[in-house]
Length: 418
Ligand SMILES: Cc1cc2nc3c(=O)[nH]c(=O)nc-3n(C[C@H](O)[C@H](O)[C@H](O)COP(=O)(O)OP(=O)(O)OC[C@H]3O[C@@H](n4cnc5c(N)ncnc54)[C@H](O)[C@@H]3O)c2cc1C
Image (cartoon, rainbow, N blue to C red; front, side, top):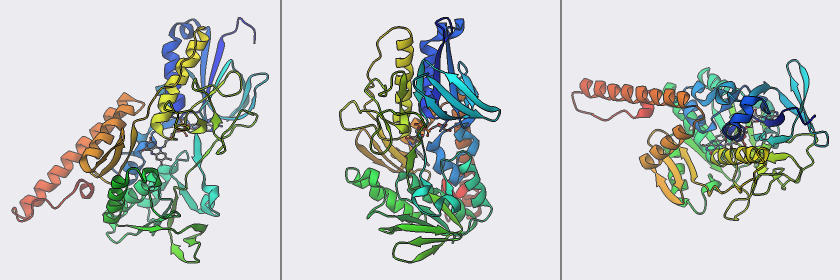
């Protein structure tokens, strides 16, 4: 690259880290982007940003699938969005190879942000990739909703972390609207579900488990799935569970990029310093695919959306500062907490270490999630959906109250109304 050519910043990924980084770059390099001395390219294998926080609500039917997906070109207007998969990296010539529908493109870079995140680790259980459904794969959630509506048969969720428990409850809510006897089994290899919350947030974990039972989810702990065959899940004690639909919630695996020989943690995450730099010059990282030190020194940041988007903002600002000849700054986000929804009004959350359940947790999560959606327009549309849902529920309750002439005045829940 000649010195007269624009400074090339290439962002790999279209998730939280990439979008928030591209926005910070747009703010920090506004003038240079306008005069053409800097170019920001976002390379993503998906054309949309997925807001995974609404996974449960999309499964239950409370939030439409399109509210959880936003076109990348609308989110990062100052960047050139290239739809393709980064398949190789040469850190000596500073070039990344991107496979697109039109062939392979070689992109030169001065600064490269690796924000390719993680993917469902379905290969951990034999047969799960062939017969299981993903909550994270591109288009996976919409396909699963179609499956549930098209007659899912008994459903089994493999993995009892927050994502798996939330998905099982949401699926039960959707299926039981049509068939009150519909069966959802949550299989967890450990002694107790929701390991992310234990032992510190035991009360929240107990509440979530109680809600799962109430929703009709059959929770099986201490049972490892050894194989998934067509229509059946096989456990390590030799027993089987009939399964028309098997959903993977076994955890995530870091997406690795061939040619990137940077320092990695044991789980494959790229090790960064507090400025979000990897061990390779000009290569930065953040999000699920990076082991970023927590400001309080308690190990790497957990792989969740809030950490990813905060790291994205910091790394975007740091690249912009470096381009402007200013020193990069340390990542200082202290964390906020974690939350799940087990149905409307049934939240389970931990906020700055304070345990919340029920409506308090549900509303807190609802407010934060709308605030952190990447598009104001889509967030407003999602709020509109909730408003319609609330009005329909109230309307439904009034009709029930009228029909029973006050004998039973509170028979419906928001869940049952949709
Ligand atoms: C079902 C589910 C529910 C969740 N719920 C919550 C929640 O409620 N709250 C919370 O905080 N977190 C939640 N998470 C976790 C959260 O989604 C992740 O921590 C977050 O997505 C990480 O963001 P990221 O930017 O690092 O990567 P990702 O979101 O994984 O994005 C990676 C991006 O890179 C792209 N990509 C991958 N490989 C390539 C390549 N080779 N070339 C080009 N592009 C590539 C992908 O298409 C994707 O756009 C949930 C996760 C799942 C799976």
